Image (cartoon, rainbow, N blue to C red):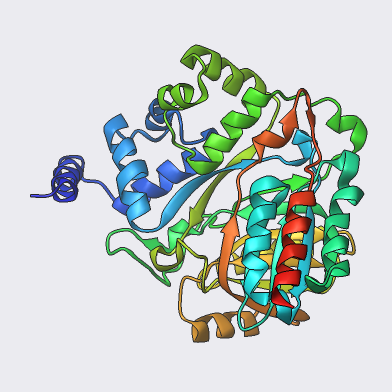
Length: 381
């Protein structure tokens, strides 16, 4: 008998003894996770009345099996970083090198995300340069255009970004699939983490150090990572790490919130099948909230959105169903104007702690990248 089979048997025995409604139990656990975070399992158990070991099994075994992941969301603005949403079009000559260039920028600079548009040489990107030299950072893409790597590009500043939690009350945990069941009164299927841009004066109030950033990086990779293991990897005492987490990271609000995310197992590695909608300016925040609320439900499942400085909105989706169901869903939402960008693959990068020197963010020298590109040009001619 495998470990998973033993876990399932124990789980079934426990549920029989307690006469558990699995759907209700997991929903209560996830409600508590959104409020308190996933790290304090004892607190979640007290708040929900679910045994501690059952909470642990649900979070570490059951939810990942069905594609649900708990994510820590950093508040980039409080870290002294800005946020830009951009669109890059690579030249035909550098089409096969595009991912290599973006990978270098993701690992060495402030590019945090790229997604390749299906059947095009185009990429959706998000960058988070420090506000002190945001314009200088964006000149990297101007240089890439000048030397023939990019055919065209544009960036718009993000004034706010949001992450709707996955609508897990629409998921049938008994059978492991999404359902179209109607929610009962009192079940609010929509919740989100919303982060608004702050001004320079407010940014100055949030002083971070390198250990704070390393903790955030570790939690970005694994929101449930054990502090003892984390301390060993970072070369710090667990008590020191716990102090920084509670007194610096949490108390200062460097964690924007905890998100219950849905990641289909077949696309978990490369991000294929996901898509972006770039919408024309939306009238007001109430209309935006209503739209996000509707599109966060299956089958579209909006995972995140960025409100740009011209009022337009870039929305990212992880489908929970086939294309025809999604098309029908979007067709019934209303008069949406914009464009749909389906991705063939995508990549996400953690906070680049190596760029934090002393007590400030540093600009990365991109000369090595530019020299390599120029060498490639000479070789190919």
